[in-house]
Image (cartoon, rainbow, N blue to C red):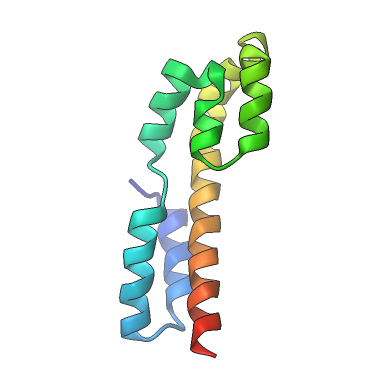
Length: 107
């Protein structure tokens, strides 16, 4: 589920796209976006192994978390509170990348 800030970000990105480009954007975003609830569940159950960070594409942080067992479980515990925001930022980054690719393909 997206919050108001994410929806507004998507509206801003899509406003300069044609109807066909907006459909392409929506299709790509739906397939590439990360589900915050899934990431939270990964973080709760196997986050100390860095799986949540690997899933979000942060392989360096995932390896650090894996090798330190979630920072001796301290990092894991803190991530339980932060991972939803990290996922939201990642989704906005994905949306921006898709938008940029569509605009670049237009040229």
